[in-house]
Length: 265
Image (cartoon, rainbow, N blue to C red; front, side, top):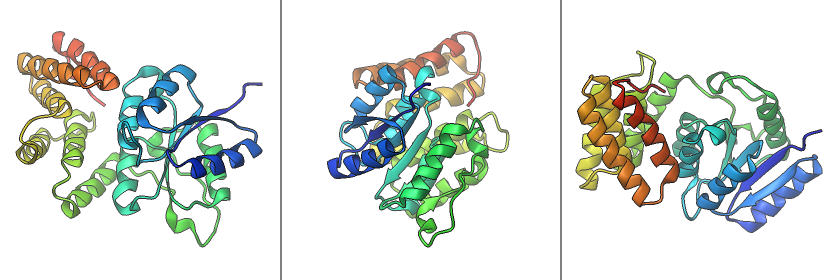
């Protein structure tokens, strides 16, 4: 019988050990990583069945780890449960939007956590249809038990941006989603461009992700030479900064642009 492997990505040793004890007591094999880069490298090599991910990590935070995992075919299918001490009103919607299966606010209820782990491991339901069963408990307010539709999650992200108008990373995330979505109710090149302009005006220079998103917008308009130029610059920047997963994902889009094809989510 195949042993179920769960990777804990946590830089707080006490938290990691405590969670490990609970998981091992329930028959799971536990893997560890204490920073973002190590987590991604080990995930590629060991292919855990599930990852429990903290957000505040050195060498690539939890948001980056989710992006890196999604950028590789063999790791994109690994389900992620986020466990964080950060403000859930800011973090929950963002990680669910990025593809996490569930979000837990520290400190957690052990029974709820284990129940959700079992459901995530056993379900083959798509992320947008997944709703973990949460036992009735006074602490359920600290657990996100709903993964909403793309449109409603985007609305939540936009609300978060109103509350944090200087969050350039969030602007870029929204831009990339609305630029690349195959859902006509979500796809909005004009909004994507506005978000990118806002982000660049605050940052002073484009990032690899901004250039990548710009390429997606150009491709959506049929302007493939411009899309290729933006994507190649983005790929070079990502590679130079060691963002291997992002560079790999951009290379995939470059091949589409070379064949006059538009990428979709």
